[in-house]
Length: 192
Image 1 (cartoon, helix red, strand yellow):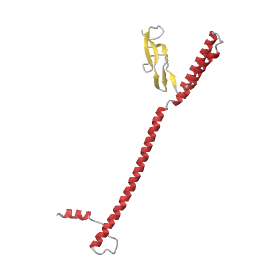
Image 2 (cartoon, rainbow, N blue to C red):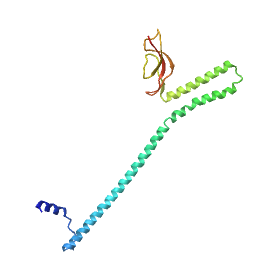
Image 3 (cartoon, rainbow, N blue to C red):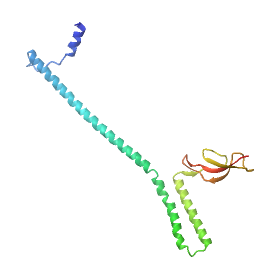
Image 4 (tube, rainbow, N blue to C red):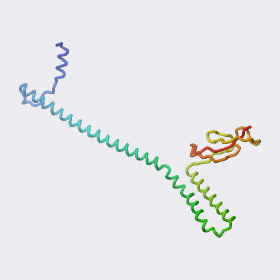
């Protein structure tokens, strides 16, 4: 065996000498060294077990937090429109009151009944726009040039008052929520 290999083996076999002064012969020294190695090994195994338990607790806490956050995320998605739905209850109530008023209006003539019905519809529309404003829902402007991002051209018409590509008439209102399109405005545009 080469000198280098012998030296490597000797370095691997180095064990702390026994601190007990009573170990005089080599067999007692070996037993004492084994006890020392065993006690160090037991100490490290205890530390390892403790660290593994800490890891498992932290991992379990992490998994619980992850599950809770995921549950909260899905609840937020499921109930995202709750505020909007609550705000829509006022216009619904207005429509229901208008229908209920029909019974008390039996003794009114047709003109007066039509006038009251118109007032009820106007009030309901006003309630809707109040809710829309609260939730940042706005109508799309249809004055000016056609914008395919916000307008849907359903027909082309001749118009002397408008330039080519300009919106002539709004056929249906378009809406957006904040900066996102809900529904494009249905329009007719000028074609020359």
